[in-house]
Length: 329
Image (cartoon, rainbow, N blue to C red; front, side, top):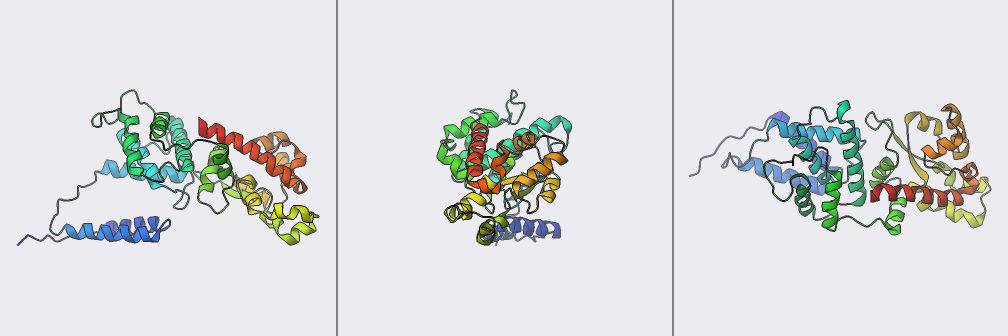
C-alpha cells in the first residue's frame, strides 16, 4: 500500500491562490474555476507524490512579483493586461539579469523600463500572444540565447531587453501583423470600454505618470454633448446628426485621450475648443503647442463642436501617422 503524506496548506499560500484565481476571473470566470480546480488536484496529489512539484526559488518569485509591479506602474490592471503570456519574456529577462530589486525605480534602468513599456504596449496592441502562445514563446527564446538553449541563459552581447530581436523572431513566425491602413483603422475604431483602448492611448501618450495613477481616459468632445437633445440644441443639422451620434466617431480613439489629473479635472464637460484654450493659458504655452502635445488638429477652428466631421478626419490622419510610426519601428 502506498505511503500517504499529510499536506498542510498555509494560510498565506491559500490567500495567494485565491488572489490568483480572482485575477484570472476578471478575464474569464470559467478559466479561473478550471485553474483553481487544477491547483487543488495538484495539491491533493502531494499526499502520494510529495516531490512531484519543485519549490520555486525566492529569486524567481521576486522576479515575477517585480514584473507584475512594473506593469502596474505602466498603468495596466487585470482588465487592460489582455495577455499575461506577454509578461513571460520580461520575467525571463529580469530574472536572468538579476534586475528584480531595481527595475521599478533605479535611475540607471530608466531606459530599460522605457524599452519594456513600449514593447509591451506594442505586442498587446498587435495581439501577438493571442493564439499559439507556446510556439511563440519558445521561438522568442532565440532572441536571448540564439539557437542553443541553456547556460548562459542570455548571450553576453545582449545588454538591454532585446525588443528588436524579439520583433524579428515574431515576424519570422508570421505573428507580426502588417501595419496596413485596415489595421490602423481598426485600432482607431477601438471603443472607450474595450480593453485594448489602454494600450493604444498609453502608446500615444507615453510621458504621463502612469506609475502614480496620474492618467485618465477621457473624451475630448464630451460624451454628454452627443445626445440627440444636446445636438439639436447646439444647432447640428439633421443631415449631420447621424455622424455625431455614431459611436465609431465620438466614443472611439478618435475622440479619446489620456490626460493627467489636472487636465482631467479642468476638462469636465467643457467643450473641446474652450478647454484647449483654457489649458494652454494655464500651462503658459501656445495653443499650437498644446494641440501638438495632445495630438490635436493644429487649426483651432477644427476644435469647434460644429466642425466635428473635420476634427475626426484630421485626428484620423494624425493618430494614424503616429501609430504607423510607432508600430512599424
